[in-house]
Amino acid sequence: MVLMTYLGGRATLFGPVPGAFPPAPAQQLLAYHFGWSQLYLVAVAAVFLVVILVLPRGIVPTPAAGSSPVVAQVGRPREDRAVEVFDREGAGPRVVFGAGALAEVPAEVARLGERRVLLIAGRHEKPHADALAPALAPVGRIEDVVVHVPAATAAAGVRAAEDAGADLLVCVGGGSATGLAKAIAKQTGTAILAVPTTYAGSELNPVWGMTADGRKTTGRDPRVLPRVVVYDPELTLSLPPEVSAASGMNAIAHAVEALYAADAAPETRSSAEEGVKLLTAALPTVVTRPLDLPARTAALRGAWRCGAALAGADMGIHHTICHVLGGAYGLPHAATHAAVLPHAVACLEAFAPTAMSRLAAALGAATDPAKALWDLTARLDAPTSLAQLGFRHQDVAAAADLVVAAAANKNLAGPRPVEREWVAELLLAAWDGTRPQDS
Image (cartoon, rainbow, N blue to C red; front, side, top):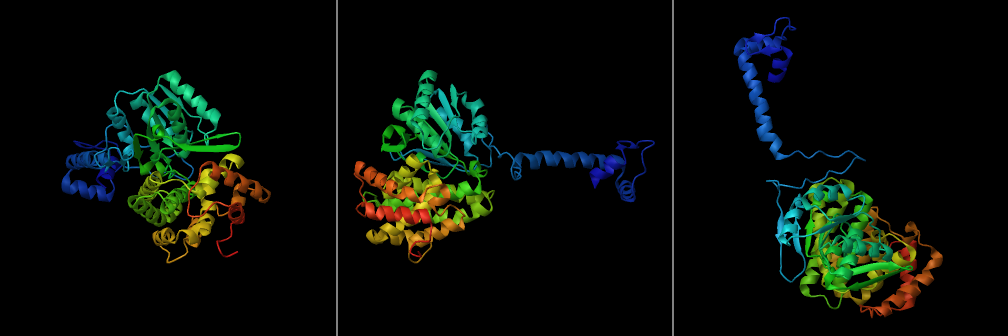
């Protein structure tokens, strides 16, 4: 009202301007009690308080549907940012976690030494990479990021890194961006700093993957493990609900395989359980309220724990199936995990009862983790069948042959010996998408 009084009456320090429209009754009353000059000073003081006390706290606008994502600012760290740092030398990447952590990337690059940065980010993550670029002064940028990392894309990335003389790869994005950075590092030995924007989890393990001639090949190499991982939940706020759902189920798949892996240590299994609990609780909110930062933070922390679990265990039959389907049939990686996982668990449940009991508890179910996973997938409106993804019934037999061959090539160890008959049944069930044991 003070501001309206001042503006409405066109007052000066010496009273109303001659010829101005008459003050309203409320304005006249205020002027009678305080005088125009005092009102002017009060108005100035109010504006001063707004500028000094409110604006520094930072007001993050809520993006409207279909608008561009809010891009975290890079530069001087915000005073209200609570960032956690986890650095266990020799026990995986250094992790920087917290809302606004993108602003810590330049400092983490500096900590690694003077670097010639090659910045990798696809078109969806370009705004975040653009925010980093002025501080990093990259010697080059790669925006051609493709799912499943085609060999030609990897070769082009290697050439770009070598031509630029890059000695640090900063990748911003999901599993595809991280996968490309790993493919480059595998050939060049270049260090990686990863900034995940999904729940993929590949940033925490030394596993690389590339696709050529319809076959996806994976392997382990310590050179591809990122040195630093920066998790900023704010970067996931613009991740669409359907992508968030599938990516979250992908993360849970990492934990599931870690739980029943023969080589998993107790700490690995505990990390897997924690990750599943966090994601199971957070993902429904993430899907229904994508801008809920606490839910996004919990989901990203859960994905971190699931990714860390898989880093401490060998991948099993579930990942082998998903890699075959992605490489040979071009199915989307995360969505394939979502459709296959309940049926993989149903086929393995009797062969790993202790692991499955722990999984059921983490999912909040008394028994039957396969059904609980299917129910969660359906609740998130993530794909529950391979048919939804374009996989055809007539491809089941050939895919089963490919899975068995891939398992033999990897000397795959698991709770159940890999046999074509049950692999084909699993693929058929996943194609159909019926709730496990309800068909």
